[in-house]
Each structure stands twice: as structure tokens, then as C-alpha cells.
Length: 565
Image 1 (cartoon, rainbow, N blue to C red):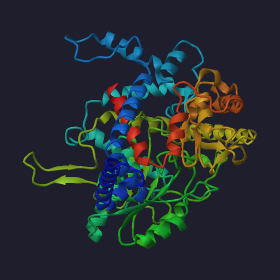
Image 2: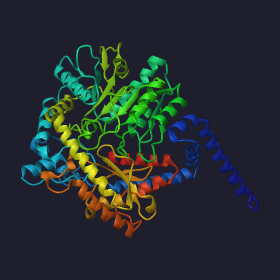
Image 3: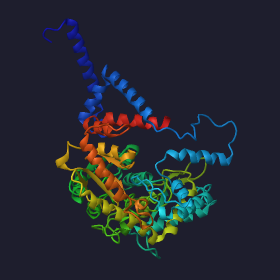
Image 4: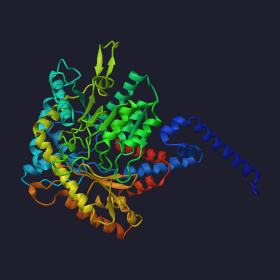
């Protein structure tokens, strides 16, 4: 350091040595860091943030961020103040229900809102939310009452105690069989090996259960006990990354086709060849959450079979739409379920287009051995012989009974009608998007999810997250769309909730298109104008920073604030 004082040179040398030491220590744990953080560049960024001085700056900025997040939390409804301790004495049942009803005042839309409108003889409010609520307004009152009554009747049963509550086990078998029959399973009959499965608490648990089964099956059949690789498209649901994190697996993602948003069999086959000794599972989506695209299930299943590994099809979002899509004018381009050789497990959410209450999904397996690999058995426990079919132990029979009631009440025709309404809205929205020059559809929608971003020639003049923030305000309709990244986009998941009520109007697609055109015009007129409480700055920062660890730190802070208030 020419011209520097001796103390400055010494200080600089010490700082450099300290940074180098921290960086070297991180490099010593490179393999695990690479898997967890995403590569050498991320390890270097983590090392830099751990250096003295930098660490303090990061801590201060994190504290500021946490304060801003707390300030932005939606306020609790005035009629139901927060509790910090148990009430000294019990509260009357009618007062408890009054508080619960008051607490929902700030929610975007609930079955209670719709039911109250119908009882009052007024038109139910139209949903402005992507997905989330799947119950159709036209039948919400009767259907919701049925699910509520069915759930209440079985709320205190527990399928863990099958000898005490045999009814819940029987209902669960029925739900699994109904789901399997819809998803290409062989018709029931003597000598037929049925598709096996169980009811879970949601799509994430269904995926976790299938991933655990694949890991254990690899250990039992091939002696592979660590470092198992799961090959999935970049568009596969985040639950697959979550399962890898929990179960010590490694997720290898392949890119989606840029034009269609689909994962191809060729891409999966190449990845399986690179990891032929450690691969435990290949994944396909039917349809993908981000873009609503249908992956090349036949190609992916064939690649998995050739590699000798199971193939899981995640049909959580499309499983109760795709069987009826052809009749609705959107036929799937190829088979996508158990009718495809090589498909060994599936996940399908009954609490979405199956119209069951939240907390209900089904995981399905082809063959006894693969499903048994997900079981947890304890043969030497002093408490007795123990076995459970998945991650949960005790479960309420409420979800099982209500799911059974939903499927039986709707039947194939009812589910087909509701799926058709959702698909029709998605198709109308697609057509309307093509008339907005600033926007373009991302991927090829196969069901009722339509993703869209800024058209290439308009990038820089308008920001998709700014548009999203505008849409969330009352002036532009108060919509709640899903924000996507890689590439920046939004998506709308249409449900039967968005269809026209009583045959009047064009439904949610027509309303959203009108508000979307206005929001695009406003975004062009005032680019970069922030919307109070909007997510555009957050998504902009997340997209611009190469430090994915910093983004993860933000997400952890956000989750902590949500849980603690």
C-alpha cells in the first residue's frame, strides 16, 4: 500500500487475513454449502457477510427490515383483540363464535361471507383471489353445510385407533379408491392389484410422503443410504425442495422448455444419466404451480423406468381438472397419470378442485412395496407395537369424513361441471391477454392456471410487480394474484368461484382483464411509482441480488414476524 501509514497497512493486512480465514473456513465445508446455498459464488458471499464490520451492517439492516415488516402487518380485526394468556374463566359458546366471526372481517373472502350473502338473498361477492378458495358460489351454502356437518360428526375420531374407529379407516379407503379411479388406476376387481394410498393434510405432506418412500425404497432395494438425488424441473413445487431439506436428499433441477414451460423427458433422462448411481426419484408436474403447464409425463416416466427409479407425478393442482379438461375444450396433449407405464406415485389435492375442506390431499402409490417404504414402524417400543402410514400420527377423522362427503356429494358430473367453469374462465382470460400488447403469456396453460409477464419489447417500460401492486388496490379491483420469479410474472388460478353467478356477466376473467388494462396504463404513465405496502420493491431486490442467502434470510424474518406479530 504505497503512501499508507504503517498502522493502515497493518490494519488492512489483518482485515484481509481475517476475511481470507473466514472464507477458507467456509470453503472447507464446500460440499454441504454448495448443496444448501447454490454454489461457490454463494459461499463467497456468505463468507463476506460473516466478516467483522460487514456482519454488524447486515444485522442492523435486518433489524430495520423486521421493524418495517411488523409495521406492515395487517391489523387484527377490532372485534377480536389478540390474547396473550388464557381467559381466567371459560367464555360462553355464543361469544366465542361472535369473536371468531369478527376475526374474519379482514379476510379477502371466506365461505362464511358467501353463505351470509345467500342467506340474505343477495348476490355472493365475487372472488378476487387467485386459487385459495375453490368452492363454487352457486352451491356453497349446501355444500359447505354438508362438509361442516360431516366434519363435526367425525371431529373426535382418530384413524390411528382403527379398532376403536373402524368407520374412518373405511372412509379413507373409499377416498383413495375414488381418487385412484379418476387418475388412471386399474378398475377394482378380483385379482387386481389396486393403487394404494392415504389421506394427508395437504399437497406438501403428500409430496413429503412420496419423497420419503422413494428414499427408503432406494435404501431397501439398492442399499443407497445417503446422498440420494431427486431430478425435477425448475418449475416443480417448492415442497420437493422442502422434502430434500428434511430427508437429506439432493434436488437436481432441469430447466423448463422456454416456449412451453414444460419439463421434457429428454432433459430428465440426461440428468438421470449424470446421477445414475445416486438417483432415487424423477418428478413430473400435472400441472406445474407457476405456469400451469403439463410436463412430458410419458417421456419423464420412460426415462425414470430406464434408470430404474420411481416416477412421481405431482397432480395436486391439476388432478381434479385434467380428467375433465377435454370436455371443457382443453384436451391434455398426452396421458399424465397411472395409465402411463413408469408412473409409480401421485399426489392430488382434494381440498382444491375436489371441493373438500382445507387440510385434505391424497398420496397414491402403484404397488405395495413403494407405499410400505413410507410407513414408520416401531417393533420394540414399550408403549406397544406402533405403525403409522406417513408423517402424522394421530389425525382427526374430520378431514377424512368431510373429504368423503365432498366427493360423494359432487360425483363425477359435479366435479366435471366445476372444472369446466374454471377452464372456461382461464381460456377467456388467455384470449383477452393477447389483446394487451405490453403483456405475454408465460408457458402453455393446460388447466385453469394462466401465467403472464411483460412482453419482451416492453421490458424496461413497465414492471410486472408494479402492475401486481396496483391490482391489489381497490382502485384497480383489489385482486390477489400470485407473484412468480425466473422469469418475473404473475399467475391467476381460476376456480369455479370465478365463474359468472346466475349466468350474468363474463365472470372474473372479464373483470380482471378490464382492471389489468387499467393497471398497465397506470404503470406505464408512472413507472417505478411505489404502492404503499406493495411487494414490487421486495421482488425487485430479490431478482437483482445474486445473494440468494440474503433472500432466504429475508424470508425467515418475514415468517418469524408473521408467527410472532
